[in-house]
Amino acid sequence: MAYDTPEESQESAGSERWGAPASRPGLGVPGDETRADGIPEEAGPARDRPAPFDNQAPGETHSPGAEEPPPRVGAPSLDQARMEEALAEARRAWECHDEVPIGAIIVLDGEVIGRGYNRVRTDGTPLAHAELLALTQAVQHLGAPRIPGAIVYTTVEPCAMCAGALLHARVARVVWGVRDPKFGGCVSLANILSDPRANHRAELTEGVRADEARELLQSFFRSKRAMQARPE
Image (cartoon, rainbow, N blue to C red; front, side, top):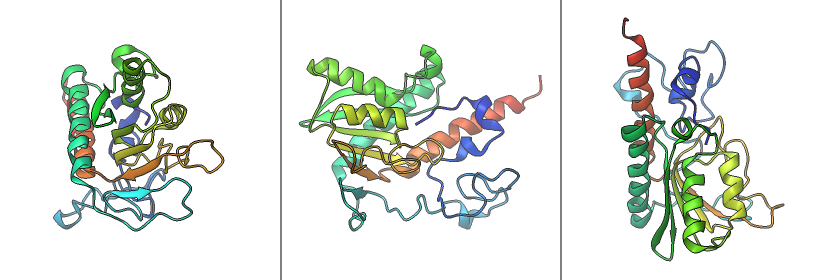
């Protein structure tokens, strides 16, 4: 995913866009009063928890090469546990470096072989996405540029850059929490990991611990806006 700075996100819907239902009117339209999570600014308690995805259930899986998504299934308990590890990485990004909280881990044969969290501002490079840092650690651990059979858990849908790298690495499966409608490269803006024209495809599962991933992001940006609103 793309990691906006608070300054870049404050005047757009980007700070609270995560997992926005694409079917809701007004999303991304300049001047619309609806936030990117689909909740009007004056929404009451009944709308505090919108449906997290458009035509998507928690744990929904997209198989490589399938023309239509298979029936929706509940997220397996192992996916839930692994996503907690990715969420822990995301929290480290915020708590240790004041970065946008995105985290990722890579698992092969039941072992975590790579971990990463957003370090774009800390490292001063747009390449320091959580997925790329986890992938770098994983291939260094194995001493090989490809990790067939690996499963990637990331709190937010990978961007096109990260999805392309995961495709080159030949990972078997990618699991994420919330979509990124503005930069997501797996289902939102492109289908890099499942495009039938590619010479490799990965199984995709989304919606795992989505509420926690979304709340972490929204809390981060709320805190930034609150700090910027304080009088000098």
